[in-house]
Image 1 (cartoon, rainbow over the protein chains, first blue to last red):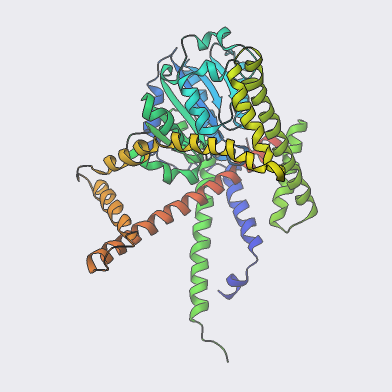
Image 2: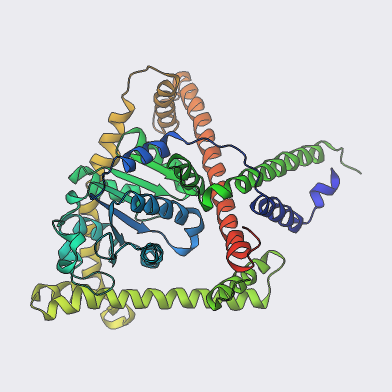
Length: 272
Length: 197
């Protein structure tokens, strides 16, 4: 065990790299179950009827995108499949690009901008902006991200405040996140909110599910895979679950071996 | 292999950043600086566009009241000039007041509703654990109570719950980091060299 205490940490990187990459190339099909939070999220999203309008707030940055972008993509694809109209907005500047990427993929499949979806763009001010947006959307966004007047877009007919959405979904890597949306929208307008957060935010967001302030909660890449499983639309996140499980196994092994080596080192008699 | 210039650039940048895991090097530093620069530039462009679209243009179209927040915004920059830096406190005070007012909604959403959600029937092991966990974890933070055995025992119980919560948080942190690695490997081996089908 002595060599473990002196092991170059770069070997651990190599092992983690191989252990994660291998299942991505050769899928193993390790089963996983859908957590109650994601199942709740799926049920609420699934209950939205074709033609109704849902808000998607893309509040994540590039740094955390591999963990949360698959969630937003899975939800957006499912809503498009159901012919639900989607209004996208961002309260984090980088969110605009992710929204634009998602809608451009759907445009190639024949969905129409301004009818099936719209990207309103970014507005600065975080919680203050959410509050203003919730109260009067055309006032905050007289134009969408592509410069079209909001009044000219068929999808925005009859939508003036957040109350006009059947459902609010928001995807966050930090602030604004579920807490801000619940404070400014959930409490005042009583619109159901489904939240998707990066994995590190998941435990701190769970109390909002328990209190029913969130209608559903998805956590990180795992949440995306669970949503794909629940909606029977497997994608990149499902393919990544084997790698996630193997990566965890490697980390658990490192922690156990590290602790064994540490305890043995501690009990070794000191040489005089 | 991808023929997209953007994908190649992204892949090379990813490899350059990961090279730090071997040891700090000049290629990593170069791309680190590029990342910071691009991030700052992106922020400036979006900030500028936001001001033009939501402040300047509507103001020119007759919403004169928007001059007030525009001026307050400009006054924030006075902090860079020593003789008038006190002026920046005015818009800052406005922002603090606004933030505090909006946060008042937290009394309901983060306080009252959360307390109500803890008052649940003890009908399952989960609900019992939830109530006991909340009460004992709060007892751990009783710093001004008389030191008696009941409070000490409850606080000790609360510490176990806190440890379990920290463990869950750490587990989620590990899971999140692995997700980020998976995302990057999918980009490198799927989008770039097409090794993942």
